[in-house]
Image (cartoon, rainbow, N blue to C red; front, side, top):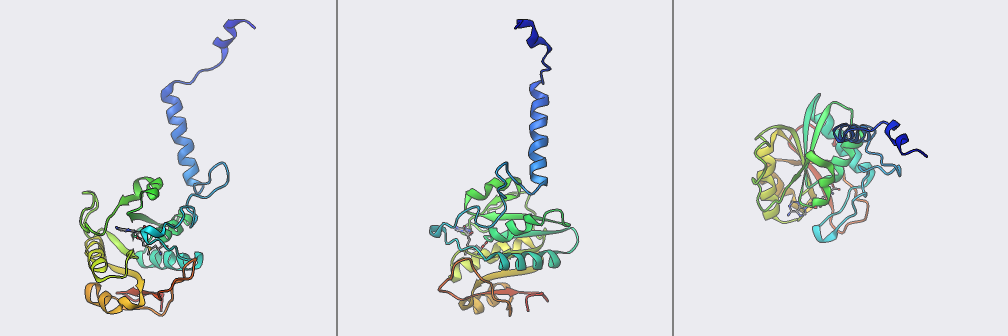
Length: 214
Ligand SMILES: C[S@@+](CC[C@H](N)C(=O)[O-])C[C@H]1O[C@@H](n2cnc3c(N)ncnc32)[C@H](O)[C@@H]1O
């Protein structure tokens, strides 16, 4: 073959290639983050539980109920913050295309795969948040603190109160009812959240607005 034949093959500039890659990446996101193996990056359990971090994922049904509740409570074009509640964020993203936006505030950096919507969060530093996360900028905050202690709840409550415009949906142990009322003014709901594994502690949801969880 003549060496000159190579000159006939159209070449893309590095700039065009980068633009194409970006286009394909965004297209994948639009299609529900399906990778070439058909694996959905937003499915619950795609990031496995790490019990050292007190990670206990909701059942698919519970995550759906909580995500739907958050969408309705947030309203059209609403903003939803998921604080230490990554499966609710994942479920929200599965329904992407609906009229809302969501952020995931998490300590586990594996969730940074979700890009700009991931915000590193440590409840020990409740107000150590990025500057662009403005106070009272979320229509609803849903939170599931990692530990069943008043200290953890109180610190997470500081974050919740900073972020929310008003509505709060808290999931935590039934034994936290009094402290939840004290720090967040929330009341227990009839809805019983379920986890993908059976937990020794009874869990409940708490809200400060008229929710669909009763
Ligand atoms: C009890 S789990 C709640 C998860 C929820 N059931 C779900 O399925 O999305 C507690 C969450 O807190 C996170 N976490 C662990 N340590 C934390 C810390 N220091 N600050 C904030 N969140 C933390 C865990 O990674 C986990 O996602």
